Image (cartoon, rainbow, N blue to C red):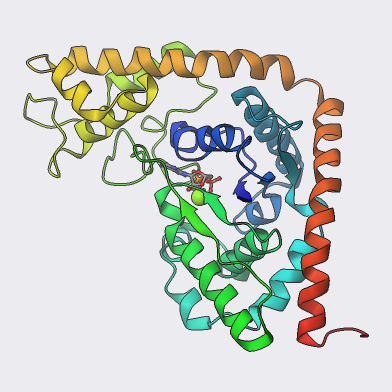
Length: 328
Ligand code: ATP
Ligand code: MG
């Protein structure tokens, strides 16, 4: 079982990231041989950004992961750009990536529509870099949220096409999404996913939000005109809150519905807020201790990069050889 996943560098990591991705990382780090987690700064440059900010946000994201329980002694945690093999493999794999497939990616359609100045080709190429991230480690399991299903499918297709054309080299990875919480929705617009870059301010619960802010955001969460705490297709807001409470308390959704039978939405929202406050408080406290020591964060990332390179370099050497690139 080799686990790999990537996360974008930002201090605005939210509850969806926490449930869809970070909790899965913590759970997977002792199962993975190894478990590899990558902070994807090269993906972050596919949309408008500020260079000085990017470094700060990278440390933010690193400290959030460590605070959540990702332990560099039990996994490989590194910064994507420290391992140059990712970019080289991106180009090599682009030769077996269909332009039509990239054109179909919904993340590109959504994110390109939001760009104000430039729709970069990096945004279009993002899934090829992501495939290179995963395939460089011959990962078998990819813990992500539901929104990444299409990109992982493409990575599998790229691996298949490479193997057909050049001989068995790459491993087709399996997607792993959590049973509950694979797609946490924006509290204000529960028809769309909670997002770092695309959501509403009031509907996005940040891991680093103050407790009072978390309470306020849940208090104003959009629900519906009914009064039943029950999961249903036409109750996107309530369904989302039920999922959140189930995950935060580690119980199933039916148990939440039973507990709040006959309760009003106001009381229910308060209970969800308290559970999330409790879930995130230890992470925020630990973050405050870890974040100031950038030397320590840098040292952890450097050690991780060394280990990551040891794996990725072997794959890229083999890919080059199979493709007839460079001397024999
Ligand atoms: P952006 O919207 O700008 O892409 P993001 O919120 O998706 O940012 P990423 O760093 O791209 O953040 O995603 C990190 C991980 O979090 C991925 O595995 C992704 O699938 C997962 N994830 C993101 N949003 C959600 C969500 N709303 N619910 C569950 N998982 C999510
Ligand atoms: Mg994303």
